[in-house]
Image (cartoon, rainbow, N blue to C red):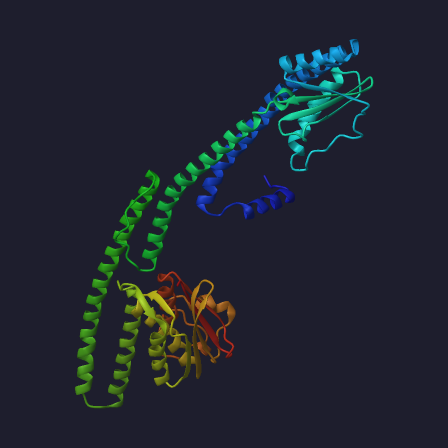
Length: 453
């Protein structure tokens, strides 16, 4: 069922604001229900219990004040009021004073803005109880004194002022319940954070080990940890890593054997041609042998891939300078702009071969080549520009396919077999990066190598 557009917008808004990490989402799953439950329990407590108790206390206090007012009305003599005041003090905890000639305050004193939500239910409850029990004008203040409630009732000749203990007007222990609920929430949240942190750490270590293995770095100290499912995934990763390493070792050994077996007859043929009479035909055969040897080198390099080389910290400047020197010997004008402090964790020989393919490809199609290395937001970028004919934008991805041969403008190197860019991208991705093509400011092709670091 397709959601309305407003619902889709709301869902996208929520997704953008929800945590993106497993730790954040797990914490939200645990803490949010606990917090909602605590809020609901607190609300029910105040709505069903605290307010009920406060109403009963307010009604009892209003009844005592009504008794005091009625008793004074029946006998308004000083002697009678003294007895009434003493009895109220001893039996009810009320402090009653008569203020002759006084009148009630014009308006009720408002509580501070920060305390208004707390005192509003108290004022309403006490106001309702007093209006039901007393038939004379009255005034009260619940905020002036920390431990008392000030209640004044208009009587004949003045005002009767009653100071009642605060716990006579409402339940004063509600904040303890809120405090305990808050402490319980904080304690549960802390336990949840510790528990989730331990579980997520095992997943992070597995992800780091997989990422390091993808870049060719070995992680011998990694051991499965965490929950049963995480340990199963980690064990499966270790088994997979072992199988891949055995496959690489077997392929390397096989390629070494194939390389030896192929070069042996090629060497015999080259020796036979060297001893033959120099003719036009033997010269053509020598060129064919050179081209065949170059093609075999290309095929073996593409099939060898990683070659089992270990990753290490390699400074970029000497590596790029060595690659560029080969392009200069081929006749290209190469300029290099690389900061000496740039260091990348990589397999030096594999990275050198990838950069050599890019720089030599640029040199074979253009007369001017620029190589720039810089640190970008996602890692290190190595940019190779040339002023050659370039490649149409719709053929950028096609150029990375093995054995791909593009149009004649980028197909002048008769020795090539269409593996240079494929090998370079394979090496870059093996290091956790990538290669993208674009239009060069020099007018030709721009190849950008992005590596983590």
